[in-house]
Amino acid sequence: QVHLVESGGGVVQAGGSLRLSCEFASHTFFNYGMGWFRQARGKEREFVAGISWSADDPNYAESVKGRFTIARDYAKNSIYLQMDGLNPEDTAVYYCAASTSWRDTYDRARDFDLWGQGTQVTVSS
Image (cartoon, rainbow, N blue to C red; front, side, top):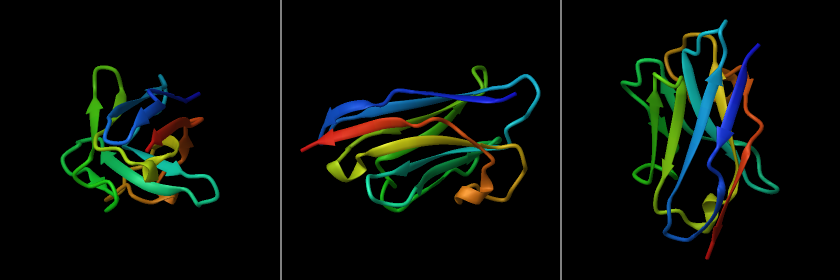
């Protein structure tokens, strides 16, 4: 059984920072790639950032490039999303995702087969 355990959401003022964490809790499966998606109220879920196991070429949505950073912690089998320069348009429920299959890139919802429960990020103006 696999669990994705997310934490780190909250409320922050525009220009502030938050860090999201996601642990891939499994003794059976291996995660080849992980990523973050978000869904704002009334909108479709969208890709935010993705990272392979080697973490040598993370990819980002254009809207977050230069502000967000995705990283791995191999010891904790976790990923993080450091979010700086937040603005109200970043308000959404953020979902962690993991893939148990190897792929060239991880930037589409169909690249992932495991999803977390979501954590709310609210940026006030």
